[in-house]
Image (cartoon, rainbow, N blue to C red; front, side, top):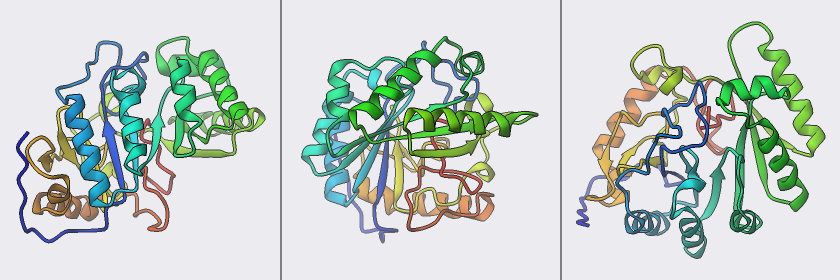
Length: 286
């Protein structure tokens, strides 16, 4: 790996980094923002590439990383990367579908530096399963309940779909999650990316805070302002230092173009960006 540096003025203080580990997932969600599914792969980033990225993130001031995909726990090095991040003093959130959780992952989830997030599409199994393309509702719901019982820090995102009944379904899903003991519940609409897109990617669908002390690293090493803006690559972590990419001219240009058109109106600067639009807590699984 060859790392180059430059003297480009740095942008906002590093804060949040997505490790977009894989395009492999047990599910085939109708709206998946990056077209992940059972036929996806883990890309070309090696374990060493990911650990170097984490090392650079820690040194560069990133306080928090999120493992996402696809289903990040399917990546063979994901558990090691969680442990590596914790050793470096970086908090970890794992965005998981909770379809299958081996004992090793339950142990990791209970660590005080780790939290999890998941998407919940409906209190009704048939509706949830229609979205995921698999009979996944029972497993996800059971593991949500187990996470609560074990004291795992959990946030759940409810996705609303266009059409009649969407808001009512979201309210029912919230009541179901609350009955399970979930207290951190967020709401977001379907994003116009990946399988939910009807046109080519457009920054108008972004929140407007992408790249502002935040960045995403994809399974091919490409760095982008966030997980939704992967077509706006601003560097390659395998050949350039993370701080240089995040603080470089390409990132500045990308974030400027996003802010010029994004309809999310920006996020509260005192809150985590995960990211979202409009006026939502923005769950990247959407």
